[in-house]
Image (cartoon, rainbow, N blue to C red; front, side, top):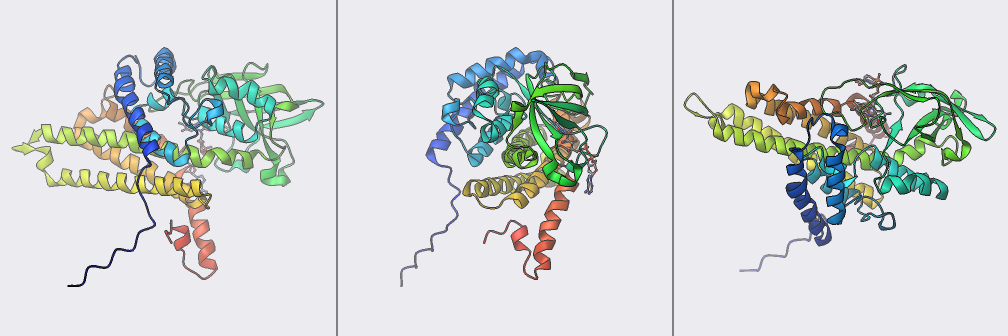
Length: 416
Ligand SMILES: Cc1cc2nc3c(=O)[nH]c(=O)nc-3n(C[C@H](O)[C@H](O)[C@H](O)COP(=O)(O)OP(=O)(O)OC[C@H]3O[C@@H](n4cnc5c(N)ncnc54)[C@H](O)[C@@H]3O)c2cc1C
């Protein structure tokens, strides 16, 4: 008999490189041995600022394990891990709201570090990135405004007008994560005439102790309240030196793009991590609890819940990792980021909804994590771009291809 022809080697390799596997092992050990036990020290998991010493302790442990700020280049104290590696790290960290904070690889600080690295002048890097990277200060990113629908960035009304060697900022922002107690904010403000459209907006560093910057109120929200909350900010005649402009005037949205892909994929992988933890608890619960003479696990309707959640998680993982791979290869990835962010945030919601149902009334008790994660999942469909806005972008790209008369596969994550 003829020997079988050797298989054509596949170009797709899902192997995690040894160096990254070793690092993931360290992150897993940190989560299991440091983070999960530390959860018991947090008095109120929805108010982590009140338990900030717990986060500081975890940061010390992360430094000792050599995994602090893994996203930063080595010269800034990090490990130079790219988007793909960070996605895998974020998945491990997703199981606990404390884990990424402890690594100091969490929005908004993580995104601001990327922005500063990308666009900061040497003076801005020393003044702001150095203490931020070392975890000595916190920061926030202020774009959304209460008075206008901020999904459409051209609506934004906060202005920064040039007056001699200063910018004078006026406006209102809200849902500014981490603003309470932050040392500085990167503020999106209009510096040009509206007819410049996107080029009318700039990014300006505003120290939060500048006269005229004030936290008006911090709305309570459902789900986890990030350290420093999500407050409303008033900027009234806030004067900062022109050296606080990041990059060029009018380049605000172009610069802000640098944080989007990495930030959205890291969020998506954290959602996968927490959804996986919820699914693990759900499956355990089904094995232990009995109705009508048998375990919940033996009722087919509930088995289908598990299967649907497993498929949601598998599809989510593949989408995020494929998108991260495209980012690292320098390939176009805007469409994939939009699809991954939208799909995973909604899959997270479906997994949590099934978990609540299986847990019954216990599933909506706020002293248990399931209800808290369920509430967290709801916000995921709004921040970092609402699902509908991403769908608008996804459909636009698809229709452009259709209008060219060819296949739309290129807008659907085509693998070639
Ligand atoms: C937990 C959390 C943290 C946040 N952190 C920050 C932060 O740190 N900094 C910051 O600047 N902002 C932050 N935000 C704000 C967030 O980015 C905005 O809420 C989001 O961009 C939507 O803007 P909006 O609330 O003004 O909604 P709007 O623009 O008023 O839109 C409302 C709804 O209209 C729908 N919609 C909008 N456009 C379309 C369309 N074209 N087609 C169909 N439907 C549409 C969507 O369903 C959308 O949810 C945070 C939000 C949350 C929930």
